[in-house]
Image (cartoon, rainbow, N blue to C red; front, side, top):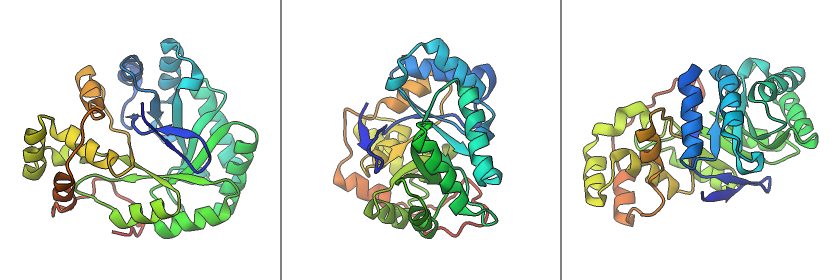
Length: 272
């Protein structure tokens, strides 16, 4: 699996399994199947309510912990110092892990003091409970503020990003400031799957529309975490590494005029 070196110095796999809305046995089996098929990056969050199932799946998969990259997120109502530490402990207990590879602020919360949040994050890194820290659903201004408040590097910003939400200004800002962008909902929850531009490019490359969209983001040096539960989709999504989109096709996708955000960002003023 290809990796990107984060500002923290740690390597992050460019491809992972998103688990939002995966719960119960369906989640557990999807994680086990993904690992069996070669995934080593699993993305979850406390608010997803599936960390116990993921913990069981990781244990049953019996994979060397050092070969896995596990991301979780602290919920926006728990961003005070004690809340961060408490929720991180709960997350580690549920996942049956000694540390997280990446811990993110799930959503910005204007009523919370980010300085407290990063004081807790810095402590978690010092104690070895977290390897790298970052944010999610932050615009450029909030990302800059986070960088200024954190003693350790803010390595990642996880946001909605797909051909119908090409947040090019945010991506440009993050690259300039050594923050890696992770795309969640990279297939826009299926909204892009009937797009004619993507269909023509998929036919030209003998690939699926999903694979074209994922490849487009990977060629922008992004990380993608598509959700999948069936073995076929888990396999299909990962078939994006032995081919490339032409510059012309990259530009065609960049120029798609359809705009659609699938996640309510709760009043966050984004760059695009």
